[in-house]
Length: 337
Ligand code: PMT
Image (cartoon, rainbow, N blue to C red; front, side):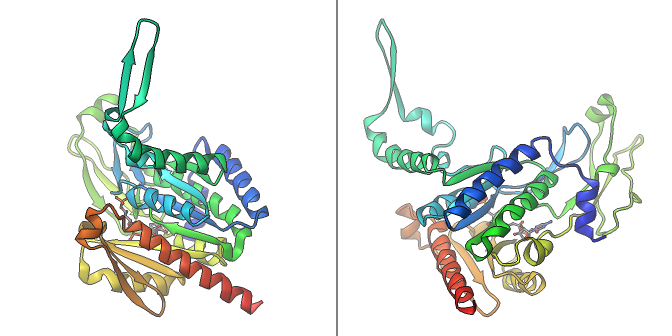
């Protein structure tokens, strides 16, 4: 059995899995009948629980900006969108008004009979276009929201989405912008602390780069700080690109902190998984610069300071470029038939 099959055999699906699977199935069947193009956008970071009945977890950094903004631009290009995101991370449309921003846009008028709530006149220009787009997307059922929290939830949802997307063949895009954990604690190695020990303990991490699933590296506790062994999560890009959706246009993201490694790592990923495109970004500059790496080419997309000040988002040209490439990909597949 392969490493990724082991992963599914040893980790139960999340409680809401069957509900989400039905939603995915219904959404995909409807859009496939309509011959629509479809995109799976993954967004936000996955968690790695450190214990059963999770109080503490390791998190992967991602606010969900890239994924939520991109989902809106895919809708603009008439794609049906499965927005698979980390619970409570940024979502399309509502992302424009986070925190107190939304409340600051409202006015409340009281009279003796009732209260009326209205958008302040100077906020209407900002709010109305976003609300209009949201309403259209919902009413035309062009977007489906499904969410995950842990890396295990993510992996189950990812595979279920792929099972439904396979029927679209070349018409499907997978746009894997979520920040997915590379390490985790297998179910059978998780700590089951007493509530008192749980509150008292401090954690020290010990990363074990091992493909071995047998529980040879137990969490060591005792009187001192426990040592936690994290094991490698299988790279799901491998079965995804070669088995689950072999005809789809698969785009992965590569996050680096070292600029010098950006293209090398992106190329390694393309060579290994044989998918179509890696969009590479550096943590600190990701909002105004990305590098597109294809099997034959690499080039940069960049937002100038002026463009950023005007409110342009880099996801707009990123998605436009992906849509263009996807169109070319479909055309060449049609020519081959
Ligand atoms: O949300 P924001 O704050 O806007 O940030 C956006 C972003 C920086 C998170 C995004 O642009 C980004 O780079 N996402 C990918 C981050 C990441 O997980 O990179 P990676 O190098 O760990 O993984 C590369 C690819 O392998 C990813 O597409 C991932 O889906 C895939 N992967 C990762 C782990 C794993 N176990 N299996 C996988 O298939």
